[in-house]
Length: 224
Image (cartoon, rainbow, N blue to C red):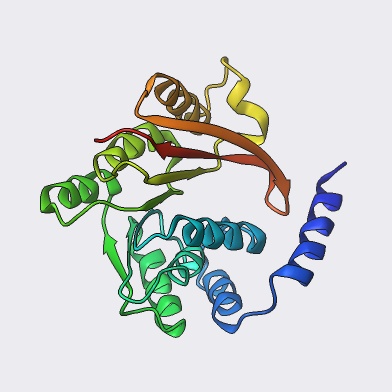
């Protein structure tokens, strides 16, 4: 098994189960043209997020880390009529591209993008007391994942599903000697998760066109 085979399988799956979509394909194309890094979720992963949100019956979704809005579109399309998605992005260039992509998908009235460091915008959301989220997707600076997760819990309710991406880091999550800030962040996150009795969680390893990585699913099982 190697990267070429993982990518080929992803292409096979996408070709059968994730048909071409003008808004999604355009979001990837225009994000690349704008110079954004090619780190959006894969099409199959995007559809997984969509299906999880639909299974959850999510009406309010929070996304931490917008990039070009690719995963945002997948998640927002899972919302029922009257649903809302809040997405947080620190980079103005990313936010500009995302807003254009979200508007082209016809979701400008569903998605609110807030610009600024998430560790500043998250406390603002908490202070606003505008309601809890049904699903939270964390896909931002890996070194700060523990802090994002702690804030996400404050915006959750019993039954909220929290999804955290890129938490295996090509297997480096198991290396206690790593000095990589991203690896240190995901290791701190797992330690925090192991001690957090208000959630039930697991981390799944994945391979595909994005390489060897994984994601965490954490279900809030107690009132917060």
